Length: 284
Image 1 (cartoon, rainbow, N blue to C red):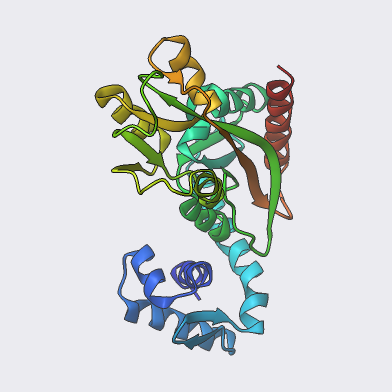
Image 2: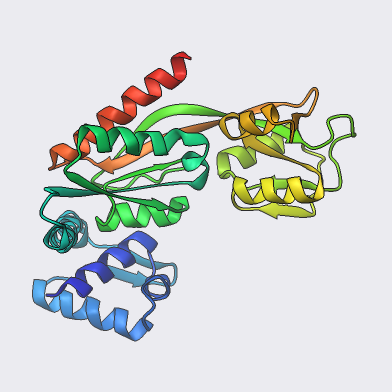
């Protein structure tokens, strides 16, 4: 058994497909199949049931899942820790949607962690829910923040707070929807609320998968988009955007995802700092 076999097992388990796992790992499907077959031979048991809909874990595969995450996490931590300068005792990897990094929220969290744990190296990443969840499942990320988490064995989903998403634009006096309205994909929850509130709205001509991109399009060409209040506040204060009159606001729950059984005090300390920051943020 080698680390590539373990990583491939976790990729198949996370995506439910040998084909998708091959795409994610940038290898051929035959390579994925060979790795899984060799792993099953080593463990002397079948790990997946393959069918037309993809691949599902067998009972033995479900039992191995927890061990596989631990194995990969141990190897990744070993690789990072061995390469750390002597002044660092440990490392943490955190990731989040780009909107959560905006307006100083998560950068302030990192600053607090550096103050409280100056001897811990912190790796910060940006990703979408699918990428963040895969890293968490594979054990290469310690804490992930996102809007639409998936539930997975061995991972804890903790509600943090609600983002308030507001409709802003460059010309508040112009009838809405305008021709340059940019629909931002804030996830399935936002899509459902948006569709329920605007059932007759045709598919917008402009779509963006992140809020930052929508802002650039709107500021350059005029128009409107929905943004978290945190992102919109400074743009409104600078006179670049305004809230569209009589427009609705939507709720966007935010979550932290991390291993259920955290083995390091650094993760616990990081989460404590995050909760304290959110408590201060929500009371102001």
